[in-house]
Length: 494
Image (cartoon, rainbow, N blue to C red):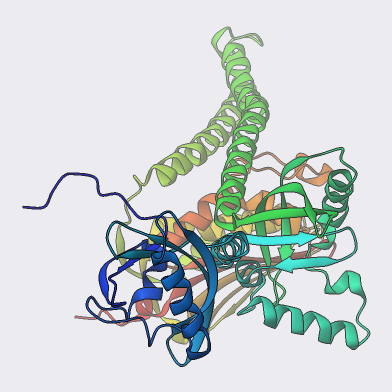
């Protein structure tokens, strides 16, 4: 069984020789074991010591053995693989009897070289980018820093930078620090080199070889390099963390925007809902109390019509709100069947025609009758088209025109409504397409409504596997397009 006893680790190489110069015992620290790899018990050291040094070694050994207590330190060339030699210092001492020990202790220079080699391996193998620089010059970079910038090695990065400078490229463009962060990095560097900021911890962006950006977390310290002050920086790639932070910020802003939009929507709806309710209550009280006498039936009949109109408007407002709530909750189910598009469009135009005629707006139809039937929820598609037509008539000036088209497209079939009205800017389109978003314009405020038509239409079209597109420019009119996929045009005849 293995021993649990802690074994002492030799701090050097110790080789014990007998009077004939043969090895009888040997121990070596792990770091020095390579120096005695070819030394065997029972053999001499003739092949390990350089021929020109061997006679001096023998003379020194005889001198040590001649008197107890003698110790001598000499320098020898020691064999290494591939016909190489290592210059080492060894101490010779006499042990009891005619045996003596060779002790090799690394000298201070060797210790320093070994420490430097170990530190270099740590630095060059580090996953963090390491840079040593003054305010004007880069003194050292490791491979990990080159990898941050998209280069295979520090040498490749240095060669590429030198080539760019030789081509006359501005040094500020060659610098890998993102232009927007250079002032911040320069100020930290200035303060470190001036002794005002011994340790720095901050984040900035680097520009990679391909032009992309990488975020780094940087810790930097003031150091002495060749006797002069310099800045030593450790950099870690935090691009993934930054993406998560940006996404959280966007989500928070979107939630705040949606909450603000709902608040504004409810504020607007309080007026939209109260207006028809007040009309219903007011006219109902006039009829109930017979304020104009029992014989004013014609007047009461007119008020009843106003009550009916206000009630229908109120029902439309409530239906829009409830439809959007169902869609957002995923509770709206489609009742699909083969629907004749010419018939459905004809019904929608009939409903909207009286409103268009009051404003002198011409309704035009351009239909590809080869389209035939569409497998869909008739009520949903009808609602989408009525929303398109209602908005088109609402925002088209008197004497304008509204064109309804049905045509084959690469994606399937497109139903579109085009007007030559006031149009919308890209920002207004984004607002109009968002739930509870209402365009705040003088013309828009002149017309009643929830502002939910387009968001509802968008979700209804998407439930059918299609997409809703808005093309518009201020003063040039608007085109609303509902595109349904090709599979919904397949013949379903028995």
